[in-house]
Image (cartoon, rainbow, N blue to C red; front, side):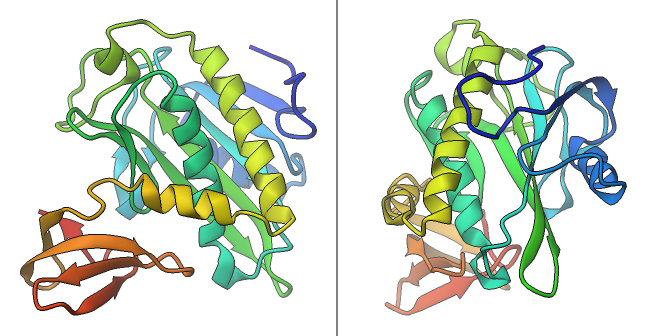
Length: 251
């Protein structure tokens, strides 16, 4: 593994490489607690035994085939109400890299990476420590299926399955870190309108009538995402409904 990333300003200058751990996010929080990591530190594991995803789901990954890592950031310039901007920055940066390796990749709200035909390629779990002045720390957990061929979970896929080509996962890792840093620095300058627009443009099933479930089954189409990160769905009667995490799902 790399001791540091040469083509970045601060991301990846401290990399903790693990053969195995339960969760890179949990490991990062423990290191934050004892003040052993700072902004830009990355924890990466060849095998993550109890990875976590959105909605409390497990993230399972074949050892050595994929990328499972966490990035430590200190976005103290962000108000807690603006934390979805960090989701946009990370999701869009990863999408830009993965799209160079496979066509038809989309961002599934709030922050999964999926192929529109084959299924889920990766997920992002952002967990924050909120302080008196804003967000003290953010830990960005990222799991990406790169070279895994078979999955025990229905609806999962990989870049290999999409392209039929085995990838250099460390090259992908370096490109992703570079893209995330560039996007994060734009966020610091409050200049991410282009990233926000691209995020919405690349949403999975944007503008397509689909079946959803909130408290009832209904037909609607995704038309956008609010500044607070709520998914905006138009229903058949023309009403616009805003949904936070866990309040709506595809059927």
